[in-house]
Amino acid sequence: MKRIYLDFAATTPVKKAVLSEMSQYFSNEFGNASSIHSFGQQARHAIDKARSNLSSFLNCQASEIIFTSGATESNNLAIKGFIQAISGQSIPHIITSSIEHHSVLDTCKYLEKNKLAEVTYLAVSKKGIVDIEEVQKAIKENTVLISIMYVNNEIGTVQPIREIGKLIEKENRDREKNHSNLSSLSQIYFHTDAVQAIEYFNHDVAHLHVDMLSLSAHKIGGPKGIGALYIKKGTPLQPQIIGGWQENRRRAGTENVAGIVGLGKAIEELKIVNCKLKIKKIQGLRDRFIKGILQNIPDVILNGDSILRSPNNANFCFNYIEGESILLNLDLQGVAASSGSACTSGSLEPSHVIMALGRDHRTAQGSIRFTLGEGLTNSDIDYVIKILPKIVKKLRKMSPFGGKRD
Ligand code: PMP
Image 1: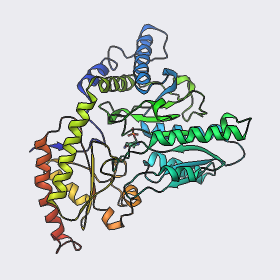
Image 2: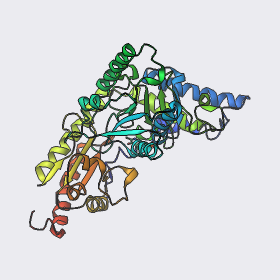
Image 3: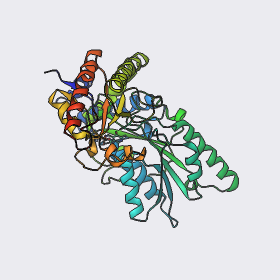
Image 4: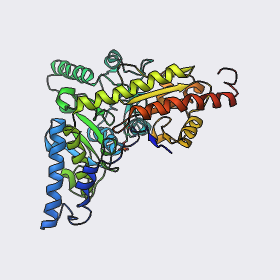
């Protein structure tokens, strides 16, 4: 049976070049990067090389990169670590959006629950975009941190990160004018979760005007369990994992050398590939897919914006049926997709992202995310366009809500 993987936002296969570069760090060059002998030095050198790859990719200094266990940790470190570092007498204010990944949302809820911060969760438009004017309106005197994701992991919408970054800089300039002795703690800092954006969008931190940026290797052809946080020099940060001097005392623990090498190589591979050509190809497949689904299945809604969206994302609500049943039927025919994000699959609650678009509970439960990646062909896409209408028709016949509709 043909097997077609349409879940690249959940994870990607490790690229051959990445695996081959990593493999020696499990065996021949297994040293601990903190050891002073030659084994340790080799490991240290490999980490330095990966850090330098990443810093040139993001256009920042090598010392501004912290390697973590993935973007969940990067987001926790950025938000919790920042708030704990500035904690004083008054409760600071954070602005985020209602469609963030749970590693941002739950971290914000934790801070609220423990009275360490107050948080504004911005609503998004019906197309899933954060309105920059709403960001401006939400800023208060005690606002210290804004965390908005770059590309949404479920509906692929692209947020106006650069514009928000510039708005924050203007706000900081105004604050400086009004309070001549502005300390670094009364600025607003800007964090973005760029996990789903790194492969397809501008990742220059100076261009984006961000102070912190999270990313993860396994979404870009690297291994699982390794990620990074870019943190601009001077940004307050309290380490979350303590007990060692690694990562410049900002993240303790023996470094995952092979993982770091894998992340560095995955980044290098992104630089080698002709990005424009790759994006054009994936976007072409996505458009073919969206058109095919909307033309061949009635009562389907495309979630998210049709233009401001990642080139690899198509997310639909199939009315009258549940996403989980569609997924199981697709899987039986060799097609892998997902309902919502991989981190919450198994939960019976409809996706918070689809609900934030204003869909009702039942419609939201019929949502499916298809995310494309390298190696897919027109014939793969056409196969799914051929089998999915039949699956939907069959399920609607069985559904108490959809029997007469199709
Ligand atoms: N943020 C976003 C937008 C994601 O898509 C993911 C992965 N589902 C994460 C954070 C968490 O990344 P990791 O798996 O590296 O912890």
